[in-house]
Image (cartoon, rainbow, N blue to C red; front, side):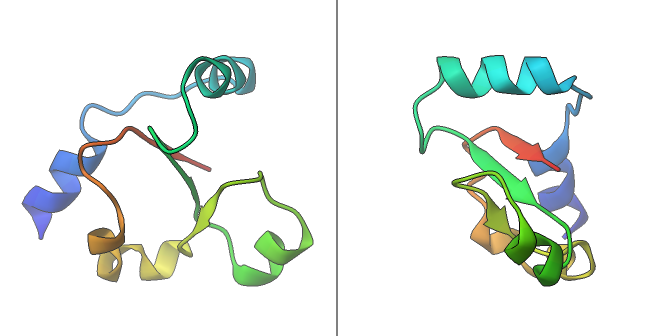
Length: 75
């Protein structure tokens, strides 16, 4: 499992909100994964359209839901 985690999130870099917006505007929907790792109640209250919810405590068990061939933006 460690190799899966490493492959999905390496290299990782922090992006400013404006950089994320720019990336999303330049790439077609479906070519990247927007991953919301907050709790379901937070997601239901407000989330970025198109985001996939996988709460942080469940992330380790849900890696198979992520496409390792796509960039992942986590918030």
